[in-house]
Every structure is written in C-alpha cells, then in structure tokens.
Length: 129
Image (cartoon, rainbow, N blue to C red):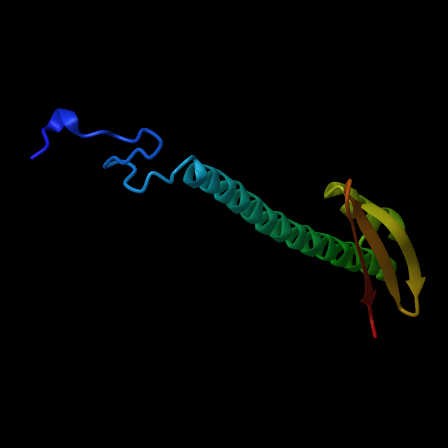
C-alpha cells in the first residue's frame, strides 16, 4: 500500500472543497459583475421611463390649467390679459408657452418642456361650447 508521501499531485488541476471542479478561473465572478451591471442598467432604464411618463402628464396638467385660466380671463372672471395669465401659470412650473389664441368662445393654449434629450408638448382648448 502506498504511503501518503508517495502520492504525486498534479498541480495543474487543483481540487479543493472551495472549488471542487477546478474550473472556476474567475468566470463566476465575471458573470456576477456583468449581471449586476446589466440589472443596474435595466432598473435605471425603467425608472427613467417612469420619470418621462410623469413629466409628460405634468405638462398636460399644467397646459390644461393654463387654458382654463385663460378661458376664465376671456370670460371676465379673472382680471388680466388672456395670454399673460396662461403664460404665468406655465412659467410657474418651468414650461414655455408656445401658442395662445382665442378660438370661437374659448382659448387654445400650447406649452412645452424642453429637456436635453426630449421635448414634451401639450395643447388644450378651454371655454364654452
């Protein structure tokens, strides 16, 4: 029977309890790093998409409010100029007034929010029908 000292070990194939197959040459670590980076990109993309939807709805709500204010000004319920009041509402939420005009017993207002990579636009008509 061979003694323990007589057994030769091949150092090119290292088997241990931590790495039983000897095949882990950093592949699992690299896979985990790439997976974590991919997950981070996916999550940030989803949050960015939600933020764009929320900003678009904010633009629509602000333009609706500006159109209602302009219509009330046109009817004489609020003092001031029709388009100036609409512009004040939009400026309050950092939007730009693009169009303001009186149309058959109402007012049409358009506004936009300019971002570095996208522009959100909305328009609304308010007044009596």
